[in-house]
Image (cartoon, rainbow over all chains, first blue to last red; front, side):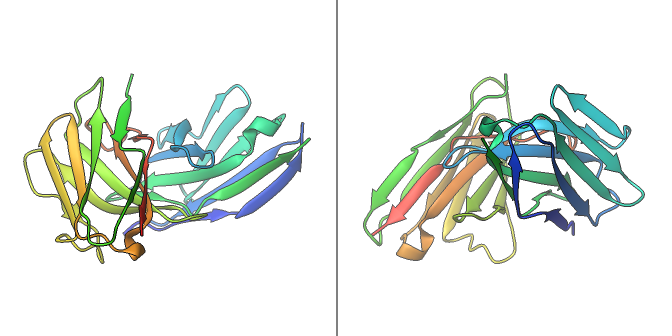
Length: 109
Length: 116
């Protein structure tokens, strides 16, 4: 089945800097890759997703890139703000949705 | 659109009690819903896939007699934790998606279950 790895597990950046989180997946049949943001005690919220027919997608300060050959995809957040602090999960749709272990992002003011 | 409601949000009960958690898709029909368990500072672990009108598909290691799932309609799935014990204490969260593999999952608010 699908296996999703995510790095780093924790990330601290200064406000205004960029943050990059990387995920790798194992199932070459996976073709949908969402990213979720989860604040403490709250539901995961979809922030951006990408399908395998494109290599990059951008939504304001957030972008996702996909390399199907290498089986990895990355989340890029530019001009980070304190409210970006949360746990971010990537996922891939193998036979089931499989989530990465998460990255705890801290944006320091 | 794509709102998922989960109830209750927090349950505290005695060991041996059975607890039912409801997951509703409010503005769309969901033939498939998913139940996850999340331990503190950990990722979402899929417990089972709930299919409307048929039996749920459980992940390896999840006791189907312990965690009963019923998906009686296109907008409602329930998870019943039977004879709960302290080790069942966790954050349980459901999700639903539109039909198709390439659709995002939309999550409920989760249920924090504490067994004394």
